[in-house]
Length: 204
Ligand code: TYD
Image 1 (tube, rainbow, N blue to C red):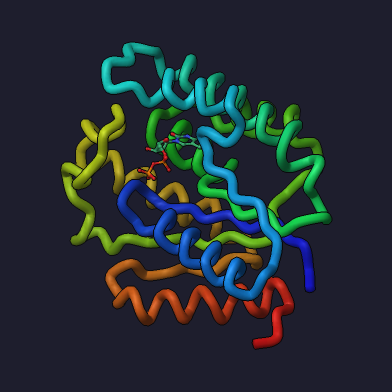
Image 2: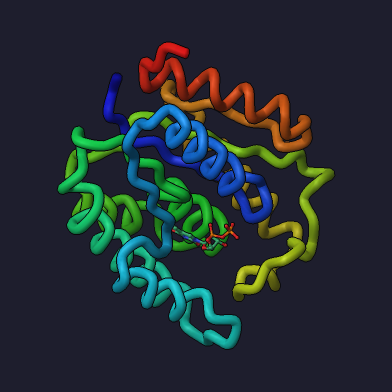
């Protein structure tokens, strides 16, 4: 079995966290050890940073947010990813593609700055596989139900831009699977599981 790093990406409300949790349950059932991380968040310090960024009352500037996302990522990388790399399967809820999609395609921050900051923190490290949870544009909602952070005030157009950004970023990534979130949960759970079995070399 391979100890790979697998990322779940998608706009808010796309179902990425649901599917990550399904995979966690599946691995637990098979008694396979894994580590689950969310971004922003992860360690105690990066959860503190998460609360600062996503606080509904936050008035932080977009460049401040960018630096905080990267700060949280550095804590995760040093404390969780690096020590467990190749030892455990690592599942991550959002990673570098989210930063490019939201901060560049959504908020127009320079691409090169984002790339350089990620490289500064991660060096040559790259996840092995990405699940991208795609929401067909007609299903993108203005107010994403249940959202309690400051990103719930963005309009549909913002999410169109971010999702287009994701697709652009992932275009040349061979190690990805696009999950259409308008399909049934059952169908998608099976699709993700089949891919997980292949990527992690699990025999059912
Ligand atoms: P998340 O906790 O994944 O929210 P949800 O599960 O409700 O989709 O992410 C919180 C927000 O942080 C989300 O709106 C996207 C944003 N974000 C960025 O803008 N840049 C980043 O680099 C990351 C990791 C997240």
